[in-house]
Image (cartoon, rainbow, N blue to C red; front, side, top):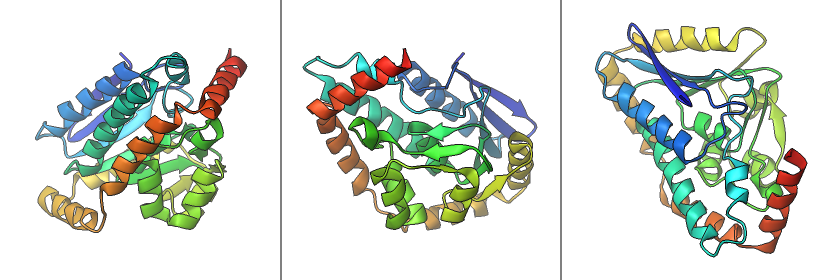
Length: 250
């Protein structure tokens, strides 16, 4: 299974486990959606922790899958459908009326960071690398990255991370407001302690407060992401850079 769920009293745990880097393909996306449904609909689950069984938290979209779409006439439409699926899953995490915690014990890039940004809380290893490097391969972070990062840390930080395709350490990410905590300790253990604390809070009050915070945000930017990324994959730059990335990875 590429995504596993576990229960420990009132804590639900989602474990990403698709070696080597938990990259999202369509099956991984559907598996995560199923895990969110399972734990979200379980009234006994009061908080959700998302962590990785691999050294990397998540490297984002499966570039090999995307590269296979090169030279196909519908590659823009296929990327749009795939990215919309990721947007939908991450939106479900963001609006889950329960606390959500991402334990970033390994690198989180592209869709991996976008997944973490959809959670209420993020704990990261101080030396772990985080980033949204898609512009470097001729695309953009279309699964909510341009929207959530800008809302969370402001346009100046979004410019660094998105336009500059910059990777930062966990320490830097905390200073920039991207994560709440960076630690030199055991990330998974500290995230679990936080999730267990959150699970004890009154669920009705937590859900209501979460809705009020969300009400301050607009939604139209997510559609713009889909429009732009489905157009970008059809450009010569994206085709050339994706092929180059795949060649270096082989």
